[in-house]
Length: 595
Ligand code: ADP
Ligand code: MG
Image (cartoon, rainbow, N blue to C red):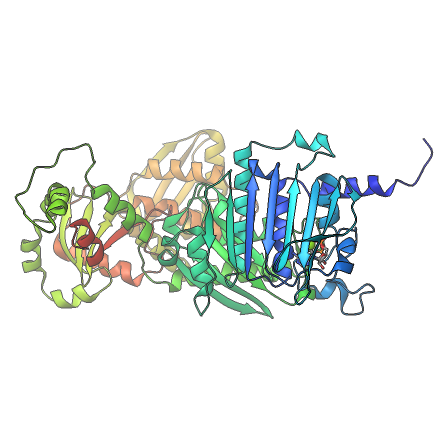
């Protein structure tokens, strides 16, 4: 076939395919336009997952009669100077700039754009269907712009086949809108339609506007279950909120990144966040976070991808270092904190199952119904902490301890959990998880200061292993020795353990060595020495812990609580499980129906 120039119509359809992947991309583009237009309220309505119908209305600046036709034409934009004399692509501060979205949507669907420019006497509209542009006609609209998109992909049916279920498409729209709402707490967003429950995000202002909006979107507990991040490095600022390690998720869907208030999905940013949590979260869990990078627009290229979901930083190392450093520091500086989400779950667990008949309680008048409802679990909760009186008496210095974050130990229950009273409620500590974290932190501290104390085994222990495992361990013998574990190769399928770190006490050397071999089998070669030593320390810490099932006296329990308070990241074990949960007076009052 000879080379020929494609028709404008064909060019537009091809380009449309890049910008409009699915209904959520339509919504994203239209909402971005409304944000760029300075809207205070943006309303999104969808039907059938957006494929049948999308409407985005705003109260922004509007488009004048004479510009409607240009707005739907490809490569026409009010956001970039035609010749780049105002700084061009390096100085983008708007979400849009490519001048493609309305043209692309008009090429793939049936679009109506109605608008009334601020101060204009009338509203006007224009329609585009499969690339066919109508004339400009009078319309009815008090203010701003209303875009309606029907029958998406009717002009490119091949695309229709790639759409997921209505539900999945509706959810993708929700996600796209959520991401935009987070970056603009001062704008009210409403999302409604026959395919969804209505959500309304009222505008919020003031110092805590961003956190308030994040709590609206991610959930109320995020406020209590996150730490603020704010750091600047070489002109790049990172701010936002990082979830406590104990509120991890099974996937990364609750990770939100913004670059100059533009929502982005970027592997490097996700990787940096993962690295920041590497020490406090299992690898198969994912943190919750909303992080905002602001930097000179010239330092980041937003024109990498037609949907602008990916960006390229001029100095990716700087951005990564900033994220890893600032998030780690914020988590450590957050001090010892227990996840609100856990308390919420705990309270839910204490509530009686509705089916279980409660013993009637003879209370008359106001509050009778509540007394009835809560009678049984209330008793159960008290039975648990009964031995408290004896320990409180032994304790001494009680008022001091009560004022500390983890309070004064009152009881040990099930030989596994410490119950402590604080100034404002109670905490329950998982002694094994807590101790494991403490030993890990101690080991890491020791690593910084020369050789780790070790104890020589009276009888060296020979551990039989698969030959790959023996080989792997022997190859890392130097690193293990730095942590106080002395091993040597012993024939093809075994190693001999001669010394173990004193810190972890008497240990089953065979099991420890096998666990280490398993751990090492998962290592990839990219891990640095520091990272490897941390992982070895984490595995060893598991062995040196006060196991569940050991009785502790009051002094031991209080010592554990005090050490937890002193140790960074002691709020979760090495796998990101919480080491303790906290119930405040308010929580307890709620349990008893006093609130
Ligand atoms: P871009 O946003 O990249 O400029 P679009 O195709 O999305 O390209 O929009 C083209 C132009 O139409 C915009 O530059 C803007 O001037 C105008 N426009 C689009 N949507 C709106 C809106 N909701 N309010 C005001 N103007 C709009
Ligand atoms: Mg746009």
